[in-house]
Length: 468
Length: 123
Image 1 (cartoon, each protein chain N blue to C red):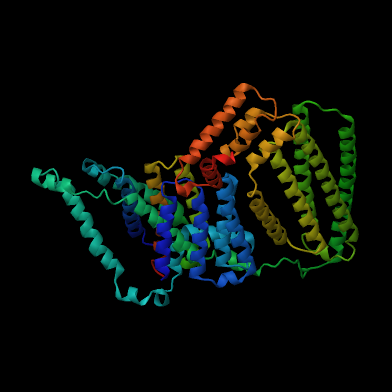
Image 2 (cartoon, chains in turn cyan, blue):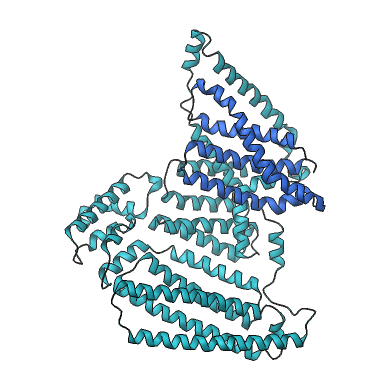
């Protein structure tokens, strides 16, 4: 029964993906994958977190259909591996989900060959049937018959004529190979395997730090003094930097895009260096026994102040980046800066929690990666090309029209609708119209497997001219 | 470790996969001698890859009384992921060119199966 369901899924895989680009097929593949996973073993789905990951996977699949963006496709692939990893072993960290998910999907069949306990795993029909001998019995004569037919083909004209009449064109061998690949994929994901000893080690690794046996107050006192002095001085320096930055922002008048760009990029570089060094220093001092030192209160307070000052630094960068965006429009790089700043803020918050609740490095990795994964899923739900175009044409003081025209076709509809909102040259208007026409043609030429939400919308509009 | 046996089986497997994919494109029987001659470069490629990337793992670690199954379970996952990454990159960067696809598909499957054969030799 299990083999039949995998075989059906493999055939569906070929129907969905063979010689097709991405669209509706990835969303349907997600549903097929879920059904196969549930049919094979529903027990991992008793865990709430597996359902959450499954929901995230289905969400990204829907987003691929709705937005047809590379980000949604990447998020979908990552959530697929996460789901397979979670089904494999749900109690581990997210990075072990990824490891198990990728390994199960790409090499599960090879692992099972070694992992299999021959006596118990071989089903009874396989025990009675010598598969190796059967393969030899069919394979070897077949290879030699084909070989000799090809050799004799030019030996006499009658034989050549007869052989020439044989045609296997009705069999699409490439389609069969593709189905075989689908079978391999579904077979692997339906029986996920685990990477050892990484999985078992991760299961044993807790989030909390514990006091080591060689705990001694004397070296800790010196380390505490060093930490307090270092972080105290760095705090002073950072306060000074922030004050000068605020003064610089409030007094200087920047009108050129290049000046503001330089300011933001310099600020970002400072931020990157500052945050990385801050986290490394804090992790170094709070790596072990200093967490349990009775008089560590001062060091903790200074560390929290240091984290707080870095948050202020982040706030200043946000203001600079936002004023840059409102003056010169949205771009992918400027959105990237905002996302980076958000992730940095989250990194600082988790570092704060690590020190506050006496957690280890694994905690930091686990939480930060969980947040990064969640952020990726959420960001995949936005049509960024549309957002950039809409913002630039309706709210930004200035914008680069050629940048908007050169974005992917996903903004073609908005660009066409808003092209008269702002003063744009006739050449650019023609380029926008051409882009929209190309987009329409592309959507109309797609097979049903490649359909996106836009294809359905276009079909509905073309059937109902009154709606225009 | 029975290296010659492994190399023989791996070459045969690589040839079958390579030819299966390429046979779709080249159906002319005049090409048959070239197909047969391809066994030589395939054997050289298989030998180089197996001797340079798989054998050292077993040669170095079997001395440490690590049994083959343990070596396989510890190192094969990372090997498979890296090999898959390289092969997928090779295929995608050439825009699914059939010869490259056949080469990398054969390379990936053969190296993975070679690990299995080495592991199951005595265990």
